[in-house]
Image (cartoon, rainbow, N blue to C red):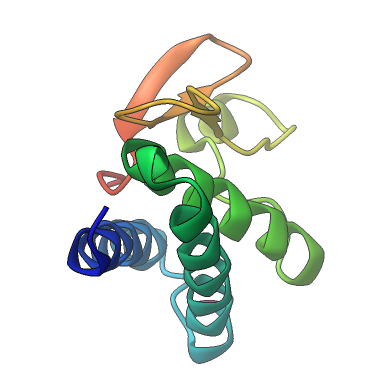
Length: 119
């Protein structure tokens, strides 16, 4: 895979994750730095496994989600369940390693949005 293909995949993943963070109003400078760290880590990963290009968006989303859990809390919350229940939970990324990742409510087993498409 050419370096330009790797960079294109990483720039796309960065933009889509930032769109989700912005949609949920959590895209402050410290959190954007977490996104940059995840992208940097996945750049190395893609250089080692160039065939993983279609998986990088879901992996960056999971990396950011894990980093946010330590510093911010669960993200992104399932807003549908939060309106009905007093037990907020985070959406998960599915497939965990595959193309076209989506945010999924694990409690209800429904796709909420593609990664990059949160409202």
